[in-house]
Image (cartoon, rainbow, N blue to C red; front, top):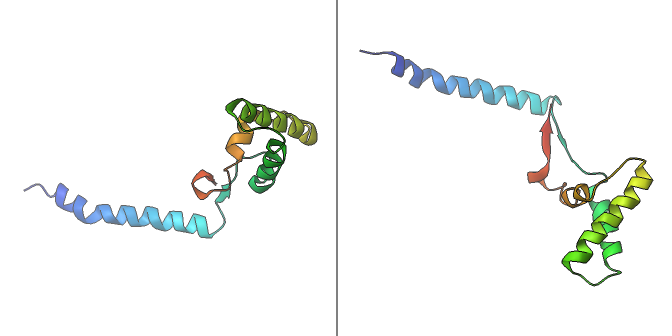
Length: 103
């Protein structure tokens, strides 16, 4: 009889438990953090985008122009180049599914 599958059946859950407990320790112990990838806090970024977009008629072209204008303004304010795609991704960076776990 091959005992390897039987041993695997009983020992594999222990590997999962060890992994789970290790992850829990890292998360609770402050070894890991959730990071936002955004040039500003998402709420501030949305406020700037909405304030600028309120001056024009909504359209796909004006959306692109608005993101580019906000990126240009932020590039000057932050003294680094900010790209329009950082604005569009940073817009929703505060949502849990967009946060990145780092350790």
